[in-house]
Image (cartoon, rainbow, N blue to C red; front, side, top):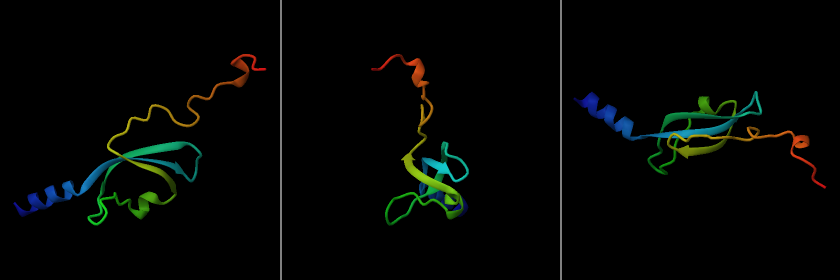
Length: 85
């Protein structure tokens, strides 16, 4: 029973977030959805160092965010847009 209560407490101290980041190996904007522990002092999500390694974190969003498009997804060929004088 104690193990079950401990597990429930652990789940309550976790928050589901979407992390938007750049990987050091690519200029593509990426995202990851996962559960991370909360700081009891600040209520902020604590990202482990091994997760942050090799990434530039852009944003941490609450919940499972549906990324509809990102930088570069809608780039159009300028020459096909018409004449802009």
